[in-house]
Structure formats: C-alpha cells, structure tokens
Image 1 (tube, rainbow, N blue to C red):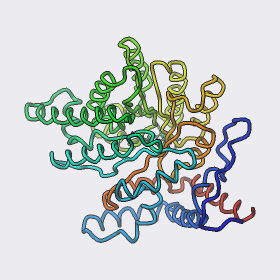
Image 2 (image 1 turned 120 degrees about the vertical axis):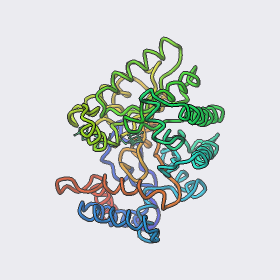
Image 3 (image 1 turned 180 degrees about the horizontal axis):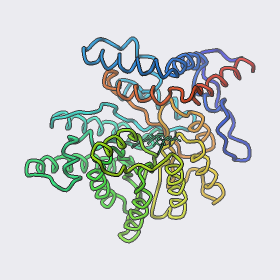
Image 4 (image 1 turned 60 degrees about the vertical axis):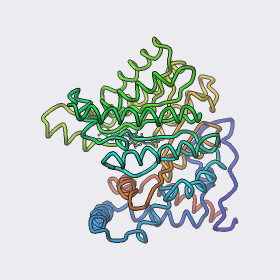
Length: 403
Ligand SMILES: Cc1cc2nc3c(=O)[nH]c(=O)nc-3n(C[C@H](O)[C@H](O)[C@H](O)COP(=O)(O)OP(=O)(O)OC[C@H]3O[C@@H](n4cnc5c(N)ncnc54)[C@H](O)[C@@H]3O)c2cc1C
C-alpha cells in the first residue's frame, strides 16, 4: 500500500508494445489517492445535469454582479487548469512530463475586445511561446485568432465584405498573427491555431493558410485545425494537402470533431440556410477516421495532431501506426487531450512512447470560468450513464485499495 498523497511510480509500458486504454494504473500514476478522491467527488457533482445547469446559471449571475467565486470554483479550476499564470502552471508541466506527457500552455481568457486588450492577449501568447522555448516538457504553443481580433471583423472578412475601417483593423490582426507565428518559428516551438465557429473560420483559414505557406517549408511549424463535424472539412484537408504538395510546403492539421455544434445548428436555422454540421454523430466519426486514413497515406505532405478524447479514433491511429511500421514518436503525428480529461488515453500513449500532450489552460480564475462551465457540461451524465472519467477514477481508487 502506498501513501495516500504520493503519486504511484509509472507503470511499465503495455505488453509487446500493444496499446490499451483501460489501464487505470498508468492513466492515474500522476495523481495521488487524495487527488483521485477529490476528483471522484467533483465528477460526482458535475455528473448531475440539473445541478450543472443550476450551477452554470448561478456562476454566470455571480460573475455579472462580481460576487467572489474563488472558494467555490477552486477545486474545479485546480483539476482542469494549470494555474493563474505560466509560473503556476510549471508544476503541472513537470508532473505530466515525468509520465511522458507534454504540455501545451493555453491562455484561457475569452472574448476580449478593443485594440489594447488584443495586443495584451498577443503578449500572453508570446510569453507562453517563450516559456516553451528549448524546454522539452512543452510540445506546442496554441492560440485562437479570436483572441487577437474582434469577432465582427473576422465575420466581415470571412464574408469578403470588409469596409475601409475594417481593412485597417484587419491589417493589425494579420500583423499580430504573423508576429505570433514568426516568434514561434524562431523559438523552435510548433504552434497550433484553434478552429472556431464557421462564420469566423473563413477568415481564420485565410490567416492559417498564409502562415503555413510561409513557415512550413522543410518542417511543419504551424498547424491549422479542421473540425470534422463540418461536412466540408475532409475535402478541405485534401485540398490543403494537394496545395502543400504542389507548392512545396507541409500542411499541418489538428484534427478535432468540433466544439460548437448547437450554436452552429441554431444560427443556420435562424438564418434559414443549411447547417454546415454533419447530419449525425456517425457521419462526424466517419469523416474523422477518414481524415486519419488520409493523413497516414500522405504523411510527407500532411502532419497531424489528433485532438480527441474518443478512444476508438485514438486507438485506430495508434494501432495503424504500429501496423504501418511508423515509430510511435514519429514527429509527423501527435495526440492531444485536455488537462483533466481522458487521462487513460494520454498517459497510456505516453507510456507507449507516443507524442502526446495536454492542453494546460491557465489564466485568472474569473476569466477561466466559461471554460470550466464547458468542462462541467461535457462531463454531465448522458442518459443516466456515469461519465467515463468518473468510472475510471472509481476503478483506480478500488484498484489501489485492493492492491
Ligand atoms: C486537444 C484538443 C484540442 C481541441 N481543439 C479544438 C478546436 O480548436 N476547435 C474546436 O472546435 N474544438 C476543439 N476541441 C474540442 C473537440 O472539437 C470536441 O468537441 C471534443 O474533443 C469532443 O470530441 P471527441 O473527438 O473528443 O470525441 P467524442 O466524444 O466521440 O465526440 C463528441 C463530438 O462529436 C460531435 N458530435 C456529437 N454529436 C453529434 C451529432 N449528433 N452530429 C454530428 N456531430 C456530433 C461533436 O463535435 C462532439 O463534440 C479540441 C479538443 C481537444 C482534445
């Protein structure tokens, strides 16, 4: 029996280089039993849809009236975020790296407006790049274009109708994005550009493509993101790869399913246009896995990050690499999950020597609240089923008690 507050030693790698995600000992070796018990309590609470709906409303109200919330949200913040700043997040980066999992620092403030706030956000992203420079605990840097631009402007540019004032603001957005990407390239830190709502994504695609064209000669330094819940994105990845091959650069794509499904469907319905989203989950899964297959056939021109908590897609990619004789640490393929989510994937991949990293959000607690609400909503029980996270945490607590 180990002491309840000491994380266990890393478990040995899976037998015969195999890959399995039900090994809770490896999945939670980085968490003490005390941590796991707190996590069991928290996931139990956020497992109730009614409680989360009520809690989310209460938190939004408390935010609006500036009621102090730190005491109530601290345990959730500590589980899903690295800390309030980069220095505080270093402990998390260190803890993950001991188990073969690297860090992607993600500044979590959202919805900034005004030129000064946008410039300040750019400085935050650059600080995260600097922190990752030459430090093997970090895999990538990341940013959202909406942190560097007003959303209305992105929408106007995407629709191809910017006016003169918008043109000047757009010039500054382009400069911010160029400055962030060239800093990352200079410092040798690959950088990913997150995907956002479809009405913003046209402008984001323009920026991301121009950055990849500029920086991705000889090595993949800038990655865009494709959301496979959109029915047009598999074809987009194929076109991008073709363009990269013809023009002599490498397309970098983080593959995700997509985070804004309800919003997308509602807005399309309001505007009376067809939804950009796939008709059902099976279609999203099919295109996600087809994108993996396409990447495996085109790795010289397309490098990927598989950004997913889906066990079946993650296993499919890991096993296909083995079958095709691709080394687990081949730099053309990486896996990523969010801190506090799907540790069974991240830490088993890490133990198997795969390139795997966690998004580690950081920022003032108040500003991380929208992110925390989304994590809670994602972990509420669906159809009365215990979330996968809670199921695995309970299993590991039982295993430690009985061992
Ligand atoms: C490292 C990382 C980075 C990420 N970066 C981004 C990003 O830049 N942009 C972004 O938008 N999201 C991003 N996400 C979130 C991601 O898009 C998903 O919302 C989330 O990961 C859940 O999908 P999944 O692949 O993990 O697995 P699953 O849980 O198997 O899939 C759930 C997803 O399937 C899709 N889906 C569910 N129901 C339906 C339906 N009825 N019809 C069609 N599709 C459906 C939705 O996209 C839903 O989120 C990121 C996730 C990770 C782990």
